[in-house]
Image (tube, rainbow, N blue to C red):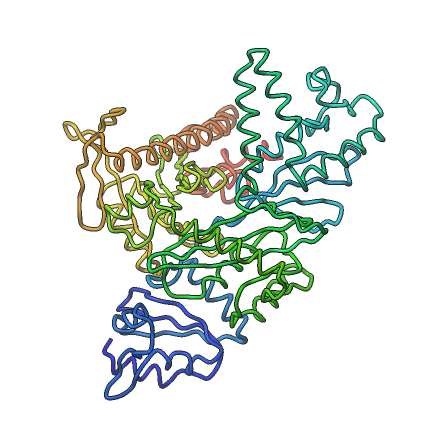
Length: 590
């Protein structure tokens, strides 16, 4: 599209709220929201002597406008609707110039359901609106150690379901309320544990004593576990030691940046103490970083009554309205004015600055540098599929988080597939994943177990949906035209865009991609074996009533799975096979 056509589109924009999108041909460059679409978009341009980027804009915006040759927009009923749509499109489509946050903001809480006769503590990422369930957090790290410390220091009900006293009672770590009436004593212990959650350092003396006792008894493994637990509890709020000496709860956000990165720190203040320090660091691109941070941090979980920030933001009222509707209570976003809050803002800002200045030499940065990726791949998804002679066709997705250096098994997904070849199976799986980006946001990188054909397929599907996402494919080394998987020495080929990389078997990047591919392969095979086992059981059920394997194959080809066969009508089954088979199946269904 020529710039003259772009000018025509600018002139036709309405004076209403909405979302605008800049493109270079079919590549989405930027998504923005506006109270007045025409006024906002016109501010990007100078119109004399010809259409060009407004020189008053930032260098990145000028580069964006020079690259753009098309413009689309969606009008909305309100500015709040525009804000929500903008955030959704950025998450789904990952425009080239927008700020891109990691999606995983569902940090864990420790909760206690006081409705139970003998309440206990658990870790959860889902917050229920229940006044009798107490939540502590969110915790950026250390939640598991804190929970284990509670059960070490206080003889709480250790197991969720227990019918008689067990080893924990013998170890004096549980009062065995399953067998004894200890309600008054238990309530007192529970109060102490709830107080310890507000100030975890109360448990350090008890933990130290247990650690030394284990060490004296030469039980060094248990002593080391408690040592690590102690360190994690100390680190929960190591960066910022604050005690406001009053029972208040609120959050604080601070942001700093340099030419390369944006860095933020969220302080979670619970009962007057900083219980969590949550840092974010991303590439410095265009967009409202604070707005995206707040939307991402509170999509699930507890929303405090008050959130403090350093400077005014044009979206404050919209965010307050959005969060209040989400929380079912009034949420205020305030500019820090009192000395006490200003000090917290400065502490958060100092912490964000430290995070900004950290030099990271992790695998994500190495991948970005080596392949010249669009974004640093902190969140990676890997795809593989598994079947046996066309039976129990399963697609598998595994997720890896570079920040925690671990597989995120909560985000693993399995797909029941119907296609008959690897290419169409991958198409089916990737299409379903793309369609779910509105619920579970797009990652930073896809890795496909396959060669150039599957890489091209993935890029084609992403382009059709205007999604900017890097894709790497890994294909197995072939010996005598057969795939060869040699542990520790596989010369797998890496495919990216139109290039093929033959890395040394000792190369860190190759080994990392192989590790992720192998985990996807393991998960796919496990899912396939489970599905095949279930199918075999159901198949044997049909065989036992005298239905031939040929008829079973016909039924599966038509109905796709056993559930559909059992739910089909007599006439449908008879049409696919014959009346004799339909009669037999209808009898077992009854």
